[in-house]
Image (cartoon, rainbow, N blue to C red; front, side):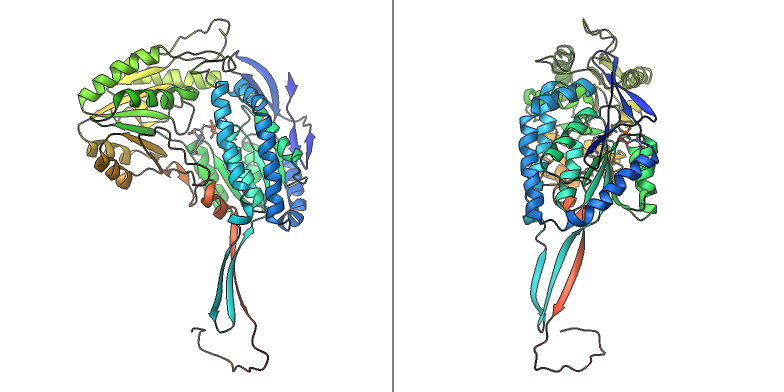
Length: 497
Ligand code: NAD
């Protein structure tokens, strides 16, 4: 068993302070210890970032982008190694791990366009001999705090863009699966990033609080559960920091009577059970418009949920691996018990699954509930496991009301062949990311990602154009060069044309 290191000022650093266990969820064994940084360790990373900032902010954007081009190549060359690490500590299948890495690389590609995205805006002759422009300037030292469920992709939503915008970045990844995140940061160092521009410090609440309280940290990006997102947003904004805090979700898929049901079922299977349901965009509620759709859907789903291929994530050809920890598995099992006792019909029960050769792993099979109603806990709360709830409603309007009344508003989708229904849904649904016959509408890197309501605290979404706005501040410059021979009298009225 090895002790994972921090990456501070370009060096791997040992930490003999507090630590936590990192599991291989497929075997149930502890495979590493991860250090939990003290305030002093966080301060070392901040000091390194502060020292690196003046030179980095003055490095031409095209040179910063060149580092990202090399980083992209290294990520692609190391895909197998990174996917293996993700799968070993998170439990997701190798194919799924490679998929999240590819979506992360998209963000590196977007960051490669730094000279274009930082061009600013220019207006000539806004007044006599006066020109004006807006500059996008970096904030300084900024930090990111990321969840366990995308150890490669979510950090890549943040620091490539923050860094090409000229900032120095401190990343505090999830303490549950930190190895792939650390390796990826080392590859960026290898790509030629100057020391101190990116540091990775592992830790728990103590490390996060140190980042919140440090006056040198100008902005915080957070992705994780809603209670922590709300805590970080309120504590950090109180201290004058810029914050984007992305939280939890309960994503609904609406099935209209005219939907192509076979394709909708295939899409739902992947979206509900892929990655063991541990995705913030996972579909966890299927809202069927009419009993006929619901009955047909359940009949098709039952067969497929029972046939899910489940095993160690690192084995090939599987649909699902284990949950991330024993605690996560027990929490999901508790929700299944709660659903049964509150009167929902458990059509497929995934509890009690044992995988041969991996009896100590944190496995659960897929579960499916029918006749779920809005007051049940399994409907209201984020389960974050392989559990799909079917809710029956009479009309599209009722389906939309249900979704709009839910506290979360991350993602949603509608399966239909009716353009009018789809258009109404897109216009009126109070959710940040919407799919039409697309079950996981995760925006590409040149759009931005973010939910509504209690799925996001802050004004700007993650990555893409909103990310550029978040990691820069505007400076508006107005410049006048009077003609030599002219003399202009004082003006006491407010300047206008
Ligand atoms: P989490 O909130 O437990 O942890 C996220 C981060 O916060 C980790 O780095 C963790 O160390 C830190 N943290 C945990 N407790 C803290 C505390 N008390 N004070 C300060 N920091 C603390 O989330 P998780 O279990 O790692 O991830 C799953 C959650 O993340 C789900 O709710 C999921 O929906 C959400 N998520 C949201 C998005 C999104 O884009 N909206 C994306 C991925 C995951």
